[in-house]
Image (cartoon, rainbow, N blue to C red; front, side, top):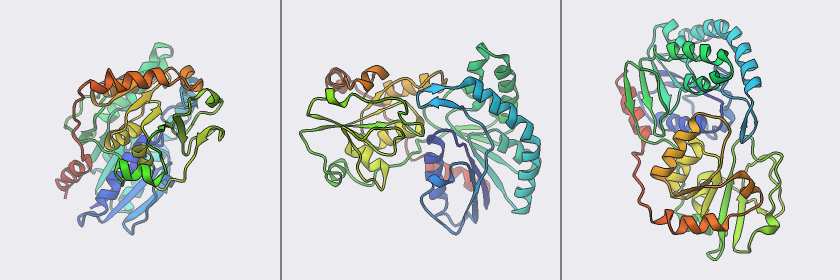
Length: 355
């Protein structure tokens, strides 16, 4: 079986989870080739003779001013430009699939690959916890363009052969075939004890890992002078982060740093939530702008995670102690539900049905 696998370039959640799925699929004998198509292929840190990498954009996502705020005008401009190129992309990618004898198209989470599959007469599988029509429809309250676009995208999603829906699910279109699968995410390779030892973390210090994705904390300077001596902020790969008062360790596998930390401070996103779940690390979360997925991720935080909300102002001023005390008492004693995991195995089982 030859797969065409498109992964959205929006944030790191799509590429981190689907990268895991791809790594799992590459070990299967029934997989001949995987043609990975994304603008985030540099995130893939492994090579394999079955894996073919192509840098190409098949969706727009959302433009952001920074890690915590949305740029609606820029998003609209990019979408209008992208819509103009869709017919050419459809023709070129349909030809690519035919030339390379692709037998199945997977998408996380663009609708255009579904249209490509329809054009080439091959089945398609959607993988994700939200669709872009749901995200864009939120902005129709201020601009009818987004409502019209959402109607169009919802139709495109409706042509998918099958939808494999991940945890932290947002409202979805009416798929003909839909199955809920387990959590997919990067896992630590070390136990908490071993991870703390590797990074030199001390028992008397509380380590808070700052995780703010591709946009980091540009434009914000944290007042680390106000931190008590028993709290240490940690960061790795955070654009715009200052070096003063923040520990920036060498990291070969980020989920091990997540496991080593006492808390992760972040804006809610699928990728970091999955990594925290597998690492059993509590979460301090803040707002992420007007993005519809946010409320559903907060719902997941309440249900499955030891977690607490912090304003960005408190994060910048390094006022953590009151919230940490709450998490160690009230929230720490609140029972949490268990998530179904190992979604990678669910994907393998579903793909076997197409062989």
